[in-house]
Image (cartoon, rainbow, N blue to C red):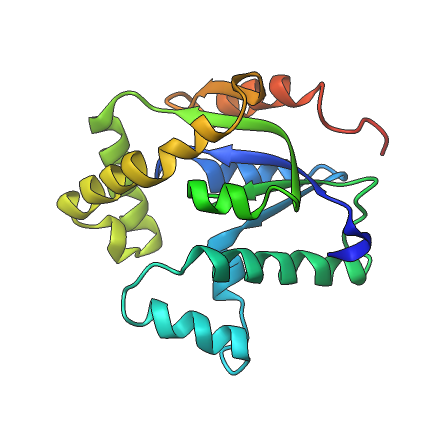
Length: 202
């Protein structure tokens, strides 16, 4: 890793459809915040590169990408942007969406990321969540969100495999935000949480 310095990070955490991507993109409009969604990083890989081929060997079979490969792709992506000057670790905080998403990834990233805050976007109403995902499927032509049974399965997988990530971090780092409200209200609540952890200089 460049200069062996940890990446200062804010984790966007929440179940599918909770608004992580939407809020992360908006927050990235701030000059000292950079938003990175692991799904976008994977999709942006050169399919002819060694990493791209390795990723495709799993994704084309419908298999989950192994934790070690996920972390390797993430580090390469970030280090390239540090090397190009796009990211300055003394100035930028990284907003991460989709990584770490397993307890194993937490361990693999211990010496890589410095977690300043975890924004936990919460939606307690399961029916509301399913409706959100169904609506997104229609707007964005996302087949993975079109079938209510598939949606419920994705939520179950999140609860079983990803939710335990929260327990791997100190409770003092976790800020709970009600995501089942107007997106601007969610943004306001997130901004309140970030005031004490995001560098103020512009």
